[in-house]
Length: 220
Length: 114
Image (cartoon, rainbow over the protein chains, first blue to last red):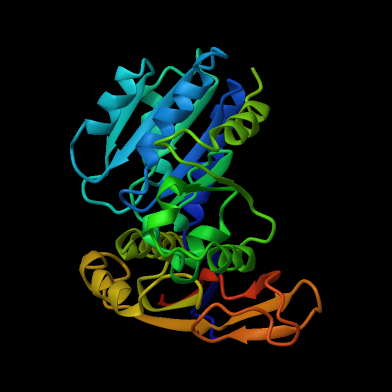
């Protein structure tokens, strides 16, 4: 190696990772559990959040929601506010994912102290969000039946980084050719033993085990 | 898709190290990118030409070293290279597999003029 060659060996997204750690620290300091909720557009992220808010209402769990969108709309945050919980809208200005800087800015605007749980709804996309850590305690993906059973094979990276997988819209199973065994084998290859909940946000079926799992994570 | 953010990070890291070394110019940048990281070389190059303008890294050549995806079977310990599609262990058929290599996403070194 010539003397003009400078060895670096640094992760390209190291700056994002460091900021993600600082976000995690801020959640930890106030005892708030945090989730990075990812999915393709239309998988039911917002419906799933609303169903989760509804399911935890009786236990008095306070939930803050951070909504990531590529356009300046408040459709999702309006729904959260209507459900009685605070929401912050992040407009990524066309960017295809949230990153740790955007989350830091959103946390600055949110009063975390009364909260038990923060759900970050990432931009609807199965590729880019997988590369950017936010610093949340868990990565959760909402997959849905109409998307098809081949998604783990086509978008492996997002499945590999998951802590929890939600399979939504199970009420549509009778109408759609979705091979659950094929789907689950793909998931198993990418993330052996991944915690998985099959739910229907429409009928509410399957939500209880997820809510129990979540309650076990919320410390306050 | 997210190559712009990635390219910006590459520029930031390269400039930081070049300045620390009191270099006048960066001529080459060596990146190591695993096959499993969803990054398109051409797209990084495209953004690079724009965002490196006016910096110490302007006109530096990007070199991409691709690392193949290596898997190991958790049941029979067989190592194998993943071609394009995600496949179970070719030896025992198990779906319990783990990535050994292919996740790399590093800036390995830069070549500078002092």
